[in-house]
Image (cartoon, rainbow, N blue to C red):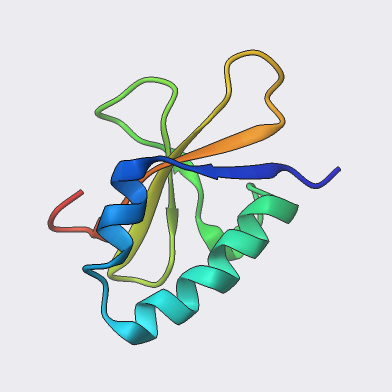
Length: 87
């Protein structure tokens, strides 16, 4: 089952700050996340600082933070995107 992607307004603002090549890679990352959040290429794992939040890699420097919707677990809510130094 393909999951739905729901970006927050914060996520949308943060995308604008990304380098163009990362924006392009982000499209592929989100497509993979939607198909299979546990795909090895995403290196998805729980985000240690916030319970219920996960992190997935765009590349070795950039990552996204996300969570499942609490009711159905069929929607991935995109919380933030940025480099590892910021997130």
